[in-house]
Image (cartoon, rainbow, N blue to C red; front, side, top):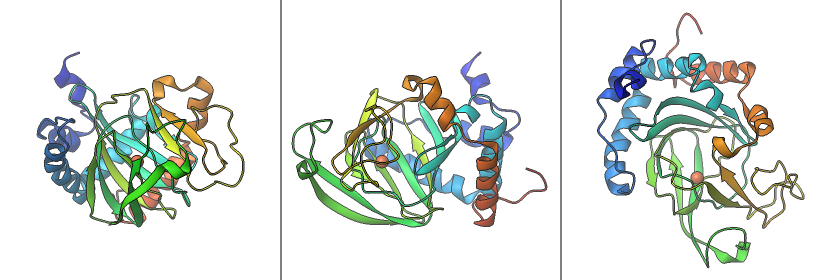
Length: 255
Ligand SMILES: [Fe+2]
């Protein structure tokens, strides 16, 4: 299959045409990525018909649907994936209060806030950020209130946190390729007790202050973990209804 065939999805003509026309992205050039990605994300968010096509298309797509997840504190719907051109588009959707958790990512990305607000922190870390890092090693350098319409682009080496405070805080994320296998996360606030998972490679449902775990890619998750995290049909339909009610996607006759 050629690149053109892979990126053309006849059931999503608006999206196929839109993504065909976006410029290439060099993910090591964060300023350059932001210059391209910020208007691209704004155009996607501002086109309710395209947003609807993407959200409904994800459910029918055999590549994207298995990547849609219900996480511990947020869900995601993967809207578009073009590994040949080095990007993936997804919605990040809060399901409840999140603790402050300084973390890195396995990839660089651009993030447009569609709904809600949260405090975005950037940190300096003493030593190498990871399993040996303590709460005292992490120092807040910048606090920024991100609100709907704001867009940031961040390098995978940055340590930051974006704890979403309430259900329905929604972000549209354009991410680059993964450049590492794992990315550390530190709880600087506890989450209701001792760590509920014995594995360092799973996000625990409860955790004590100072607990470190690593986010891993889908390919490194166990089958059991993958099936636990897969988005349910009911969960997906709830999100479609909410996204319609909040006017983030167009309303149609059918779902
Ligand atoms: Fe993050």
